Length: 70
Image 1 (cartoon, rainbow, N blue to C red):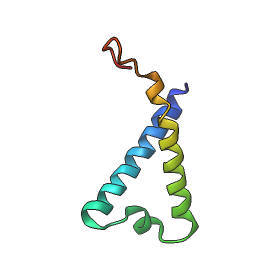
Image 2 (cartoon, one colour; image 1 turned 90 degrees about the vertical axis):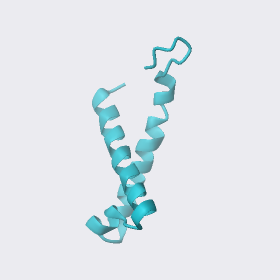
Image 3 (cartoon, one colour; image 1 turned 60 degrees about the horizontal axis):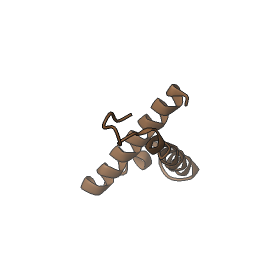
């Protein structure tokens, strides 16, 4: 697959995971803090979700049978 797309999707998911961590630990939503409320945060959350779905394909790349990983 496209390495640039892989890196971009992984980066976006990591940022999304950090946001969820901030929500869980400190009740602080970084996306809402930066972008406010309305349609823009919803688009950002949708992009994070799509990247998460895309990253599910990484499981197809992992070969655990011989212990070498990816």
